[in-house]
Image 1: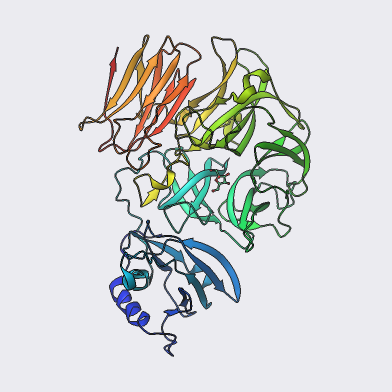
Image 2 (image 1 turned 120 degrees about the horizontal axis):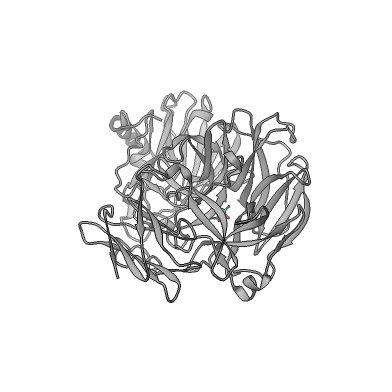
Length: 573
Ligand code: FRU
């Protein structure tokens, strides 16, 4: 997509304005964009087959309620979108790509949620005067909070990382993406790639929502041995299609899509869905190949438990077992699972770790990532030492407020289980003070098992080796209880308080910068410490701080919105 200006937009806006004042269709069929008012706050936005431009630019107002847009082309319903069409002012524009509708008559039946709360009466629908066609869309960043070395979408909303895999030197990262707004909705899979986990290239949308539903979270694998029949080394994505029936029920079904060009374009399998269940929250398929049983293993979040399935070909799935009753935190829905084998420290053995994201129920409110350590035999996951998880007790991979939906890359080099998380919290993700884009991901991390001073096993997360020696982090050595304070020239501070007696590390962002957007933001995150802390690696970016104490034994990830990036570190006893 080319950067800069909406070319010819003035002329176009005037032309559009002239058309929209007409009461209904006229015979000016040569017009490429026409708008006709229909009954009951509905409008028909029509783009003719002769249209040459690449995009229909949608004027968006963040505070406007969602309007419903039914996209019809070729006499078929193509999408059902919820778009915050501007009613009183235009906050920004977003492009609706016309490429796939070239040569077709395109109709957008739009039920505009007109604001009748006297914010402007008749004038409270200014989208009509600003919608237009264009060949370019401006993706230039104008926001000071955009991170410099974390992955973030080029524009618009992002949540969970999805379907990550590594192939031929390239890390592929898909993500929950709303191309039509900077708040959650209209889920697609966006796509980015990187060779160094620092610089990311952005690609066209990989999976678009369709009439099965929006494309929710899922995973990808590389099918080296053509088990699914789409070819050797085909990339197979498995995702949840989520839809609301006209009768008001949410339905979630599991689908696969394959790519024979290394993950850039996907074809949805005609036999979809490949897996269903009779419960409403049934989503986020995560699959991997189990050498021992020569089967694909799939972990699904299902309400407040995980269900485990197996398959020879990713099309026919057999339920193997269920996990979670009476164990861990159940204060929210279990989401985005992952299951991986990690080496035991100081021995040749290994243990399995089940990752279970949950929302809400996190240790300092909202969403967070809990984990369980145990064994998996290809059929059933069992925890060691169940007492650690009984009565609502749970272990968390990251005790900060902004670490969620974390899952691993498949096929990472050297049998790594590189993970990445969404750096936000469902309590306030939609209202953090950015607009051109909203949400970034954490830096990538390498999970590992370590022993605490209580001799029990815990999950640690080290920064991936790609970040070493790049000058991105600051190393701090400490001895005994102290506060590590990050600050900027404006006197804003982010405090880390280490209490060696209480064995806790606390992140305090009460003076960190902007925080009024949500009362859930200024909450201290307290992490239990398993071994005395002697040092920390701290990654500071324009709107985040990630702390890895003892190189990953205790991890705290926090969003911050300071006037300028913290550039000073001091230690107070
Ligand atoms: C987690 C989640 C997933 C779901 C996706 C929808 O953040 O709720 O369970 O697939 O987001 O965007």
